[in-house]
Image (cartoon, rainbow, N blue to C red; front, side, top):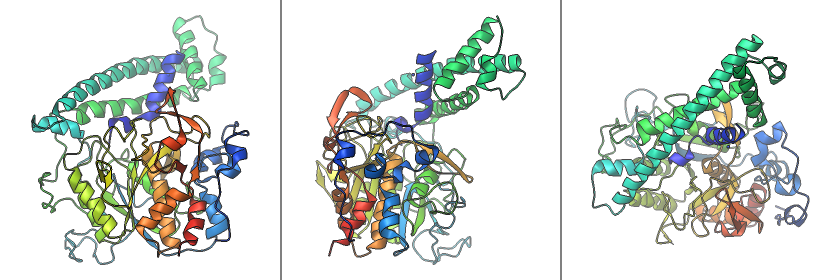
Length: 534
C-alpha cells in the first residue's frame, strides 16, 4: 500500500479550498460516432449513473464503463453458470455485510471454532479464508523497513533514505496546511452557528446573515467557497478530519522508523515459517474498508434492492487479510496466493502494491504457481502517476520484461469522463507492464457495517476486471487462465484518443500507448469472444 493511495478526496478538496480561499451477437468495435467525433457526454451524471457508471456502456451511454449491464441483459440473461471462487487478497472484509453475506466462501471441510485443522491444510479454523496479519493493523512502508534493517549493502538503501526525508517533509507540510485550514473552517462553523442559531444551517440561511463582524463576514465567504466545491461547511469539517487522521497515521506509523506493527511472532524472512495468523478475516476497525469495497465491486449481490451490484453473479469471495494500514509483507502475499490456489480459487484479485519488495521472487514464484494451476491473477497498476515500464511496482510477473507466467493481468484506472481526462490522474501506466484499463475513479461499493461509499484508485479498477474474469470462468468453465487473460485484453474497446497522463496537462499521449492492449475492459465483448473459442 503506497502513501500515494491515500486521502485522494480529502487532499484534492483541500487543494481546491486553498485556491478558492485547490454468441450470435457481434463484438463491438469502437463507436466512431461517439469516440473520435461528437457527441461526447457533456451533462453531469445522474445519481444513479454515478453509482453504476462502471457498468455502463461507451457505445450507448458515452461513459467508458465495462458494458456489464448490457452483458447481463443481452447475453447472460438468466444463465447462472458455474460457481467460481474469487480470492480477495486485501485488508479485512466485512463478511457479514448485507450485500456480501450470501457470496462469502465457506470452507466446508473445516469445523468452525473447534481449534483444529480439520482439513489438514495447515490453517486452523480457516472457515472463510485466512488472516495473515493477526491482530495487527498499522504498519510501516517497505522502504522504511529497509532503513530499519540497517542493510546498507542494499542497492536501494540510499534511495530509501532520500525518499524518507522527502516523504516526511511532504506529509509534515500537509499536516501544517490541514491544521491551518481545520482551524479556519472550525472557527467559521462556530461563527455561523452563533449567527444563525442553528448547527444544521443551510447556505441560503448563511447568505441571509446581516453582520458587520469581520469574523462572520469571513465565515460566510468560507462557506460559499466550500459550497462552490460541492460541499457544505459541515461536510468539509469531516473531510478535513479524515485527512488529518490519514496524515497522522502516515507520520506516526508508515514513516516512523521506531514503530513496530508486526504482531504475529513469525520470521518475515523465512517463507517456510507459516504457523502464524488466524481465521478472523474481518476488518479490525471501521476505517479498514478497502477489502470490503473491493469485494463488493467483484461480487456485491446483484439486483437485491440494496446499495451496489457486483460485476459477477455466481461467485464466492475467499477473504485473505494481508494488507495493513501500510505496506504488505512479501511473505504474506506469497503465502496468500498459494493458499488461494490450494483451496480452489480460480481468480485472485490483488489491489495492493509498493515500490520496494525485498522478497519479490517469493511473490513472483507464487504468481507462477497460480498460473501453473490455471488461476488468473489480477493486479492493480498502482497510484503513483508513473510509467511502470521505467519505475518499479510490485508485485510483478516478469524479470527484465520476461514474463514468468501468462495468467497475470495488470489494470490501470479510468474516470467516468470520456475524452482527454479519461485516464485517472493517479493511475500508473506502461506499454509493456500494464495490460488494460478499467473504471477506477469514484467507484461506488460496499463498506463495513452495511454502508456504501465512493472510492478511487487502481484498487477499484482491478476488481472490475477480476469480476469479468470470474464471469468468463463461470459461463465458459473450459477456458484456461491464459485464454481468459487473452480474451479480456483482445475484447476491450481499442481507443486512439489522446489523453492527459498522470494528471499533468502538459503530458498528453495516445491512450493506445498506455497499456499493452491499448483497450478498456468490456464484459459484453469478452463474453462474445469467449463463446467463439473452441
